[in-house]
Amino acid sequence: MNRDLRRDRHDRRDLVIALVAALLVGTAVLVGAAVERADGTLHVRWPPLYAHWDPHVGPGTPAACAVAVTVVAYGPSLAGRLPWRALLGAVWGTAAAWTFALALIDGWRRGVAGRLTTKYEYLQVIDRFDAIHGTLRDFTRHILIDSPDHWPAHVAGHPPGATLTFVLLDRVGLGGGAWAGVWCVVVGATAGVAVLVAVRALAGEALARRAAPFLVLAPAAVWMGTSADGYFASVAAWSLALFALAVTGCKPRLSAPAAGLLFGLTCYLSYGLTLFALIGAGVLLLGRTRVRERLAVLPLVLAGFVVVPLLFTLAGFDWWEAYRLLVERYYQGAGGIRPYGYWVWANLACTVLVVGLATVAGLRRATVTLVGRRHEVLDREVLTRPDRSDPAAEPRLALLVLTALLALLVADLSGMSKAETERIWLPFALWLLPAGAFLPRPRTWLTAQATLALLINHLLATGW
Image (cartoon, rainbow, N blue to C red; front, side):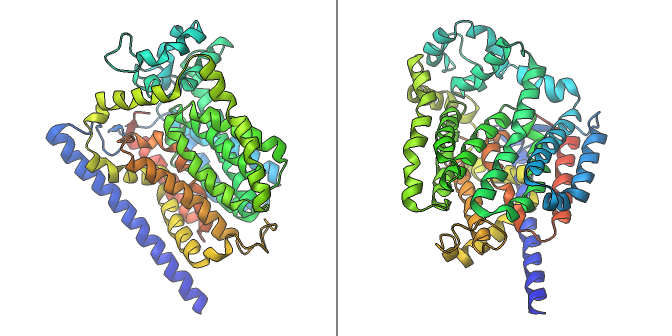
């Protein structure tokens, strides 16, 4: 009876925190609409999202509904019994199907092929990279808005690794918006696989399996298929996944340099993703090998990390100078007008729409778990038992997702992410989704996740 009472109490608290999150979103919508009508300083038409009201259906509607119903009905059971490698393949394929289906609600052209061809996007400057070395050497000269031939907003706002990705796709015959969109969806869908690999290594397979359906059926997929940030998220996620394998003793001589290499690439895809170092510190803490062995992998990580910065530096691109100029460019544009006092909390409302109410409830449970069982996180007796019998599994997963939340909050307080965080924070948001593993009624919460994603994509025309 006491156990039932405790379960009911936790369920009620989950609903309360979900209601609070919903009220935060509602407040951000109402206050944002009032501010935008009054002075237009938010520079979004449906705050807190970069979107506008446009109820519609499209060719992706039946497929999206079918994927949602299938994952809700069969996802939790299949995640529990599929062989591990088959589960990873299923997560990738289903996440890609869910993302494509949501994108196709807006049609092929608007939902997939045209997203990266607008005046703000990377494909606008492909022809300026005919001589890659020369373009990289002169890249910083075109960041400021008053400079000659200044870069479009997204090109100026990211290191050149982002644009160079699409330049190289064009060079191998995969040019144009359609191939760029497909690349972002297919590669971005692997991010959930990477998160599962990390969760299994750090907190055990049982929790990874429980988290799998939540990584597939996430509202974040609304934006994973419509911006290059889905691709950035996958690179960053695999960097952490490989680091997790390295600090748990899984082929560290291979996984550690590979983790460093991908983190180096991450830093040259987006300046803000350097904050993934905070999550990396959490991964290092959670490693299941002895402290000496974990520290021993860091030189290998560093050896891999320096490769990408070295190549770009030799090509003439100065990351630090570019970042300094980016900050100046940011305040030359909408970033200098958008009010920090609104966005510092409205960004969090935006994040609720990205991760869903299930993740909010899961984060509440993660916090309770970590506070109540923090002494178990580094218990030497269970460090080598990443399995169902591991009593430290839940607090370890709690620490991982809350470290990701910390990185997101730092990004928020920086003031460099005012609006558009539904895409900018995708790499961080993905690491909050495993909090769904703490929820006792997965099908109910998965239904809430799918419903939110379908409502957003059918009622709003999202900008990304």
